[in-house]
Length: 223
Image (cartoon, rainbow, N blue to C red; front, side, top):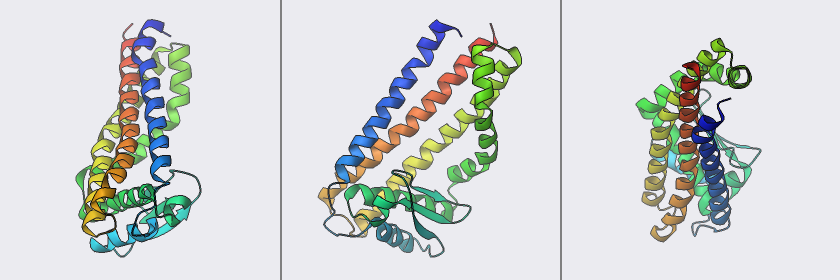
């Protein structure tokens, strides 16, 4: 391991990732305790948003965990963590509408979502190679695995880069729909936006992390 290069490229990304994770946890916790005036649950909000967009074939289901919410385009299933599924807080409505935003992207054929879906299989393969790459390339400095590390992190970096517009676009769609449908009032919108913006930083941190590791392996492979 090249310690000076590691300290320059990698350590700051750990700090950024930790900060982003703490920010989203704290912001979500804050706004999950503020109930919306409408009293509408996250599941209902997601349903209203999708219905407004003409989507009637997406199943909304509760899942275990916290902040495990996601939209599954292959099954056309919108999964909400229990607190967001049945809760009516500003955080629950924001997260639920965000996931509904992904369903809208899927329906309209949003190009960046299609690109991310196309990258899914190769990204899964690259992710499974990470333990081998990190141990063999980073600690043993095996030349072939250093080059493999470059390829793996190139795939992950492209995937994370494509993810950024997908996530930010879904958040934009969410806030517009929540207000236009009257699910939240104008003075409640900042709480929703802060929740979604905090979540957005986790995607930025993931991209920066992948890019930093890519630069590290590129530099190590040329030594």
